[in-house]
Image (tube, rainbow, N blue to C red):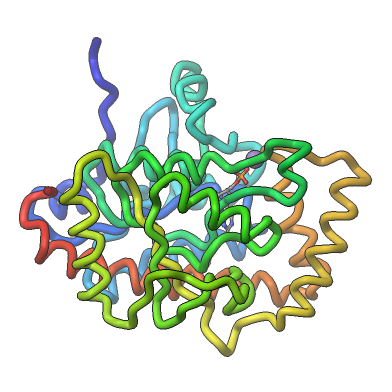
Length: 310
Ligand code: PSU
Ligand code: MN
């Protein structure tokens, strides 16, 4: 059996060979998470933030049946323009997209998988998927949580998306052995808002200290990912009440229209952008950049802990 190879750009290949810090970035947020042309501008800007903080960005996607870590600008533009015409790829449909030589925008779950195949240890996103509200009826639990349980990658996110059942999401992460580390906060961030009010067991402001914790986690057998929870910058945060009102409304509409499964998250995010007059999109872009900066610094610190991949 030949193992599928991950196609790297020159920049990413060189960085991985020479031990330069690398930060993985996902592509579902480009094709399904934000509208054109802001999605293209944001994706390119996020890559730039990673570079400014001393790491090489590796945006991950499936293009033409190839697994790619590191994209050319034209490829990012293609994913941004194509939007929903590009399949949203998680782990369950990853092989199906490859086998058809098709294109896919990778979710957090799929991006973590590719990052780990390529030897990339740090990944920046907006907010991870999690346990959906009403999970007891739908059993809708994002594959992102299973990926965090299984795959050794540190994911920097602004907590989980506020459209979710956040207490249940934290419970699930605890059950599956995933450390959740707050950055400068002892509560779980709620994506558009800085805090959900839910207490975290671990937090620090010091990136080197966080890297040390991640490194120690990976020195133990059978450990998987780590969630580094970095709150949205204060000046772009939505007020809790404003965010909740938009979320409640969007959830009601999704229910009325029977939007489910993989369509649910993109639908809710898009409606919330409309309902907040674009404020949630500004928050989303700001928090992804903020996470990218932290991820680059974390990758730098981890490179000091892990001279060769570990
Ligand atoms: N966070 C964002 N925008 C997004 C997503 C997360 O700010 O578009 C995407 C991620 O790719 C995440 C996915 O993995 O939504 C979760 O989808 P689901 O709930 O269907 O697993
Ligand atoms: Mn789901």
